[in-house]
Length: 302
Image (cartoon, rainbow, N blue to C red; front, side, top):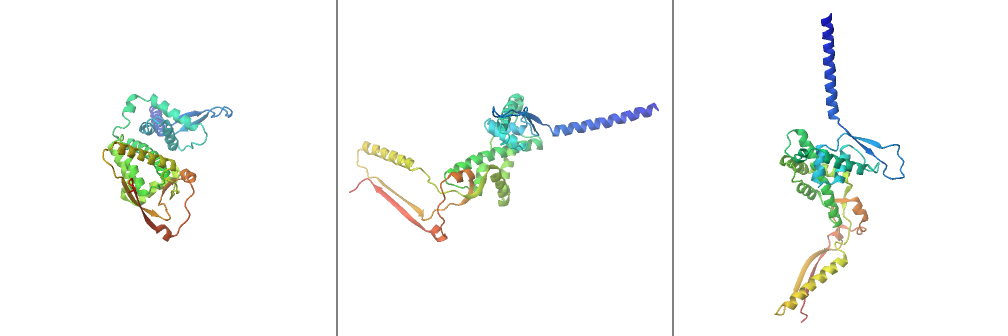
């Protein structure tokens, strides 16, 4: 009887050990960190600090990698941390500041060896996925800045330009294996459909759309006048220092469209709304109609 009782107790201990190990594995997979949100305004009434649980903690390798790749930009790292945890950065309003502070605090708390080894070659698929996610976010953030700069110039980059720029923006700090994965991801294996898929997600996440850039002046008139004045001041200086008389000629030709239009590409919604109004609609014949303008200028009137 005592042997049977001991066997029963042993079986119960083994079952309890298995359950404890399963619970430990589950908790390790769902490791979370908590951050407290204080009222963002002095007049805001909150019944105590609001606690937000993060499935991806601030000390995760992908978050620290984004923090390093962006030049220790806590704002971008906080945006990445919120996206990884499915949080809305607009509500509550104090969330961006709290997440940024959490990332900076985690960066200061982790061992120095962890920071040094952030971009070591990955030894397992999980590390490879962590660095890949960080690289994707960094490239898309820089691509967003580049796109807005192109829109301000009146350019709406197309698919090929965006793919080429994304490949160029791949961080050089990443291991070669991860960098190659990113380049293949942006190129989509050379398939147009795969490239359009990630571009569609990119436009949705960063507030872009397909359209034409609004017609606007490439350079302000005052800036053009200043450049012309500087050029002629330099020419007068050269002419004054020359011992022989100079004959100055300048000729240039350009094709001018009667009804200029822009190509369809990726444009920002905010930039498009703030730009001047688009040109009037034109027929196909009017859009194709062009003339050649040839200008010649000479310093000698004789």
